[in-house]
Image 1 (cartoon, rainbow, N blue to C red):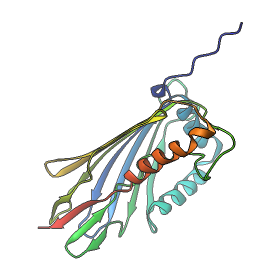
Image 2: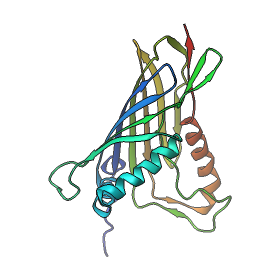
Image 3: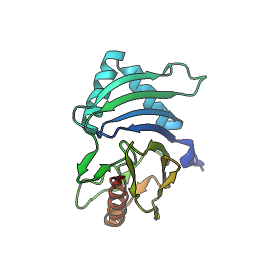
Amino acid sequence: MIDRTPLAEPQDNALITQQQIEINADGAIEVELKSCSSGTTEADERSFYAEYSPTESREILEEIIDGVSPGARLLENTYSDPFDFKKEFTDYLKCYAPNYCKKAGDILIFQVPMIGTICSGTGKEERRYPILYRSKSYEKDEVEFNIPEGYEVYHLPEPIEIKTPYFEYHSSYKKEGEKVLYQGEFIMNVVKIPPEKYPDYCKFCQRMEKSCKRYVLFREK
């Protein structure tokens, strides 16, 4: 009898992302993003920078940044040596997005960019075969952003907690002085979604994905 190799725990395949965001009163934002990873997630990060030249990887990142906000520019991108496996792999980027926040009267509308995760394989109404993931996984987003000059916090989204047989997701916003802190955590606990569980899984995924698109509202003083 052959023993099965146990699956790694979610935290063994992790992606930890930290963002510092400066919001200007005119609606522009400047973002500094740092990430570190482990397990299969780290392998994917290393593979990306190993496969593409610095010019090619920058062009791909510029397209991603522009997709987040049309007209956004990648200012800087640095990363660890993808072939140095003795050191933790880290990635850093800095970008600027003009006109990112929207204005409605005396309200400035802001949505935290580049947070959350998407449940892959959920694009169909129904499935005949199971969704199979390579591994369990863990993602954590930590974001700090300022209250724009001349504004005060008018609305912060309520905390979200989703616990399912498939994954767990938590997110919260908290005002601390002249800053707002966001934290989101996603834990994928299974690697297989059977067809009969697919509708239920999609429902929870949609709720999670929708929660990542909520708005922070600032009001002019």
